[in-house]
Image 1 (cartoon, rainbow, N blue to C red):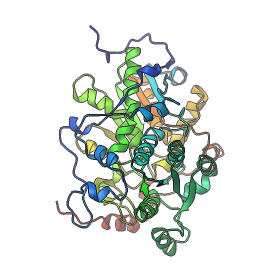
Image 2 (cartoon, rainbow, N blue to C red):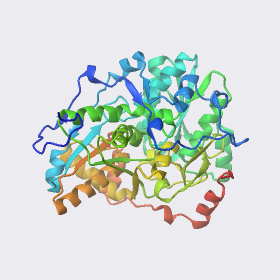
Image 3 (cartoon, rainbow, N blue to C red):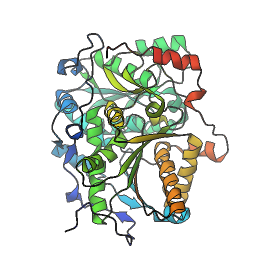
Image 4 (cartoon, rainbow, N blue to C red):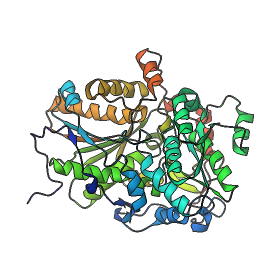
Length: 467
């Protein structure tokens, strides 16, 4: 009898693969128990001892703290969260027939499309449960950071569902380049500030040293954490990086497994964009489970911006998650918490560090990584838009560029490889970025182009943690 994850049928013609509402997964998947070695612990910056629940309680409700450290392989999704998920989930899986024809490739390309959510991205998959658990704990307000604005939009939407106030610090570069994200966040009822701001000690310190700072996710995190830590009725919500955030996103991969099984396909390559890691982990982790169990053997590829290549160029070390050093220490691939990436259009990927869990899995050799310059990525985004009819957000164009590269290799070799990628959001509010590319005004930025002394200082500022 054929496995539900059995090998591909070469005559598959179906373009859109849907699940019925009652087929939507009702559990999130935690990859940690299935890994061959546990990830390094999160450390208290003062004592250098592993953090406990009380250390995280000023920022997160106990339900999320429990999910962050759980040893359970699955966590049930609350019914109230499932009800809101049903506004857009299950999300569609498409086969990119028209892109395949344009590339003249025998490869079969599938993309899981998360742009159907209220925020236009994958971010509500974790924003909704985070708002739910905070509301249950009696919290009145959530603070957060956002880069390109997808996470801020998602949390603003989620907070309205549970009657919570929402306050967002958006990285200044994206705040200026993407005004419609700010408008959407305000439409959902949240308050938004450019970061660095004069509203916090962390922001004022940055502005005093660098008045024209374009900001970074690390700075915006510092501002949001500072406000949350000072108010008993306020918690902080993070849109990526942490274990529980990546776990909430695994509904993407769990749905994709079911959808590919409907057409008898098994992926040979899974590719996703990576900034903090939530979209990538959400797609890849359920397939990694199947790989570790010997039920399939896909290669898994993370694609990051050349301007901020934490996996491919960063140090694997303990570092702060924010610029001001207010968070616990996490062992991750990092460019240094003081590193300020150039203001590329993929604002959601401008983070100095990679998810500790993805960093650990990378160190175990279970995934590989490459970096791409933004002009190559936008070329892939334009080709995708002109063949498949969806304008991608700048972030997933990184994954599309790598997927297209592989499909072209298949055209040269004749290999019938199955490629799966996550189209984690649409680019309807990112059209100025496409205008910059189409008009020839876009420039590429490489991490190595930064001042060598500044990069050295950022790495030298890593916290000293004994081996």
